[in-house]
Amino acid sequence: MGKIDFAGESFCAGLDGVTIQSKGSRLLGGLYRAAGQGPRPTAILLHGLPGVEKNLDIAYALRDAGWNCLYFHYRGSWGSEGAFSLAGRQDDLLAAAKWLKEQPCVDADRLVLIGHSAGGYLALMAGAMDTGFRAMVALCPLASPARAPLPLETFNEFAGMLHGVSGEELRSQWQALPALDAHADRLRGRSLLMLTGRQDELFPPRHYAPLLAAVPTMEWHEFADGDHCLSLCRQEAVRRILAWLAAQVTQWR
Image (cartoon, rainbow, N blue to C red; front, side, top):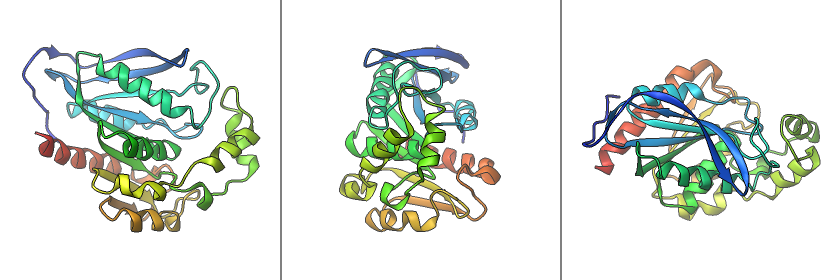
């Protein structure tokens, strides 16, 4: 994927620590700022639950390809203020998008979402609700809590890395999330890429069958040796994301 050039102010590549206000709490993050002329297309990275995998290899690759990339931590996670909740992540994402649109290096009309696991769920759900996001990429996303009934021990482990939420509360919040299939009418026709792993221990291939049937327009690739973090196929996953986004940008012009 080559550099993307737009007329206007010149920006230098860099990494800026950022703070974003969401519902009275300060979110921590970083903006990988691309070099180039004029405002750049920009991706927002959404980590999962609790978010041990940050997917920053994607951020570096995007910056090298001429994209800005923002990562941030939801309220109550990884040093951000406030109490964590799965529903609250939507407000945090909207606050991050609002902040991005105010930055001179960001093309506000070319924002995309890239999420992993529960962050992939958020990317697809937010994209379904807000057409201001031009494209969505989901890596091993949660598609339906009913098809992923995790044990309480797992939620207790997750809660131990978060602030202001118990394992029981996390489990209840998880179970209350609607399936992405229920919003298939809003997803069909949108620019969607989903990457999954056949060896995913949390969300195996059968987890995605109803979503793929409901949204046949979604571009999908399954890595035969991919686990939940696509550990053995990261480079190929990044290449696919970059190539797919390059094709999207061509269509936006």
